Image 1: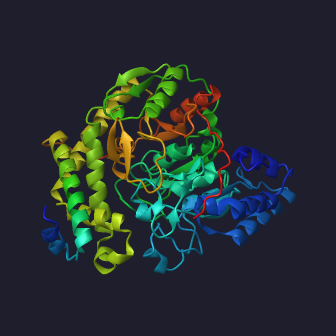
Image 2: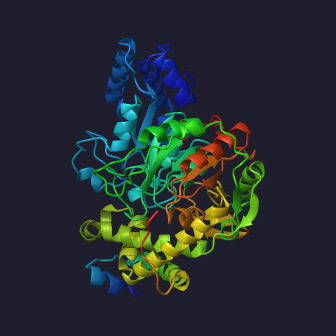
Image 3: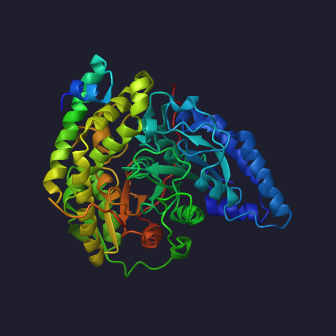
Length: 50
Length: 468
C-alpha cells in the first residue's frame, strides 16, 4: 500500500521520516498478510470460543 | 527479611507477628531509594499509601483478625493498571494529561484485599507496543542481571522489579508476549493465563482480541499464590469468563510422572539460539517429553497476531495519531499508523485462521497435557541495539523477540514462562503451555521442574553503578 494514499484515507499527516518508517512497516504487514491468507481456510468459522 | 524473601515467607512472618508489615514496607522503600534508579523499574512510588496499607495489616494482626494470605507482601503494577489517585500512563505522555483513576483495577484491589502492599506503578513500552521497555518518555528499564541490557517488554518494569528484589510480586499484561518475554530476559516466573481467565477491567487496552493480564513472581509457589488471589468472575467485564475457581496452590508438590509432555518443534526451534534450545532441552528431558511435536500453521498464526495487533492498536489510537503525532514515541507511532492503514479484509482471514488453528491445538492437547517451547529466541540484548545476531544472521530485536510467544497467545492458551537453570550468565526462559483453562496442570509441571532444580530464579549479581 502507498503510505500517502493510506494517510489521506485516514486523515493523517506524515512527516518525511515517518513516511519512510510507515512504508517499511506496511511492507512487513503485507508479507504477514500473505502468510495469513495462504494458511486461512477459504471458508469456515470465524468464531473464537475457548 | 531478605530482599529476595518469597511472598509466602513474608506473609507467614507478618501473619505470625514475627515481623511487621510496616518494617517490610520500610525496608522495600529503602532498597528502592538506594537502588531503584539503577534499574528504573518504577514510574511512581506510593510510599505514604504503602505505609498506610502496612499499618492496617499490622493492626489486623494485633486485633487477631485475618490480615489475608498475602499479608505485608510488597507488590507493584504495570502502569496500565488503574491505581486510585494515580493517572494511568500506559507508558505514554499523552495519557499523562488525563485525570487520576477513581478506583484500583480489580486485580490490584484483589491483591490489596489479600493483604499485599502496593508499592508503586511500573515502567512499560509505550501503549504496550514493544518487547524491550526502552521507553522514550520515561527511560529504559535496565535488566537487573546486566544493566547494559534490556529488561524485555512490554511489562519490563514488572519483571525487573521482581528480579531485582524490589517487590515479591507484580502485575503485567501480555498481548503478544509482554509477560513471557520480560520474564525470560529477567529470569523470573510469569503467568499468562487463558484468554478471559482474569479480569482486564481497569487496565488500559491495547488489542481487545488479544489482551491478557497476569502476575510475575520469583517462584512457582508465589506465582500460584498471586494467581489464586486474582482469580474470580467479574460481572462488569464481558471478556472475563465465568470459570470456577481452580486452585493453583493445591497443585504444588503433586507428582508430574503422569503428565504427557511434548516439545514443540518446527517453527518453535527455527532461529532459536543455542541457549534457548538448551533451556527447552533441559525442561523436556526432566519431563521425559516427546520431541519434535508440530503445531501446524504456527508461523501464519504469528503473522495473524502481528496483523491483528497493528489493526486494532492503530484504530484505538487513531484520534491521537491525528491530533498529537509528535507526542508518540516515533517507533510506536509509525507501527500504529501502518497497522491502521491495513484494509479490514485481513480481519476475516485472521478470524478464520484463529478458529482453525485453535482446533489444531485442541487436537494436540488430546495427546499432550503440556507443551514446551522457548520463551524467547535469545537472552536479553544490549540496550539501544536494534539488531541481534541469530544463527549467524542479523535480525531485528523488536520484530523477533516474540517469535515463539505470539503463536500461543493468538489462541489464548495458558502459559507459565519459567527461568531455566542453564548455567549461562544471562537468564532465559521456557514456555510451559497447556490447553485452555488448564492452568492447574502448568503449576504441577512448574512445581515439579523447580523441585528437580531445572527451573528457578537466580538472584542478580551485584552490578557496578550505571551512570545515566
